[in-house]
Image (tube, rainbow, N blue to C red; front, top):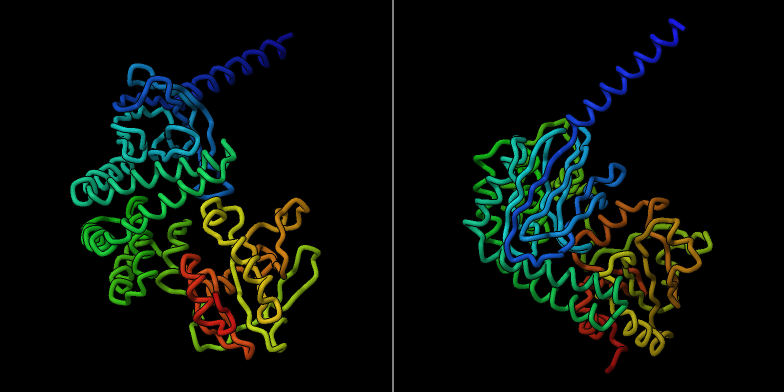
Length: 399
């Protein structure tokens, strides 16, 4: 009996401590927003640890009288995201267990809201956000427009199953994105100067990733060197998804092939697990169009001129071949329901030298490569340039 009483008391103490610890871990989020209709759904999302940079919805509430409220136990070391709508952007929040966060903002783009609490990284993030609002207001206005168009694209694609609306929204997002690109030099100048006077932080690494990406795709060596100087502030043993990509931009491990180079061959598996050389169709007097397709990405699915490729390939099948390198996990690639092409399609996934092939053939925005019958790279292009580049590099095409 004595042992039972002692065990019971210990259990009660343990439960009391657990309850106290849980109470201490509860984070409170109070939101006050304008320009958001009552009834708008607000999501609180937590990070998916096995997929860095990805957040999964955990709790939902609605806006009432311009206000919303969450209470949630957040583990130490975790951050979170608060967003409007299933496909809307979110405001990222750094916090500690038991911390209160006050969220304020105007409009349906939660990425523009301010989340204030006592976490030093969150305070730093708000310094960055206010600075960008002051120096890059015109650029941020376009970003809000693009986020709205992108949300419409996903809603039409996944909710309404309306390809026409999804395509129109995708085109609108691309148009706005082209406008955003004109601000590239200004954004780089403003943020690179700002970073020179900031210490390393999560906000620092995010902005460094953005400007390093711009410098890389602009192929501007002077700007790349500025980014390399800024990269020196990153702790040597620090690694994250952002820093992983910054390293790839600033110190690419593979030399990209360009027009005039001899194409490099690789062996990949088809849908049946049979290995193929990606250049195996050469040597028959035919040209080759090598394509990479990220088939799980709605934007790229809508952007890809699949029907045009089918039409042109059927018309000139005796003159050129197409090989598609499908970027998707092996499980999806092997699925019988996965859409398959009428030509050779190979899996560019975890079972292949993914990074080497991407870094060698498709390091930037080009997704199509034109190869001569002798195995020489003639040109590389983005989807919007495919039509004109086909006529330019495949002399038999007459339209």
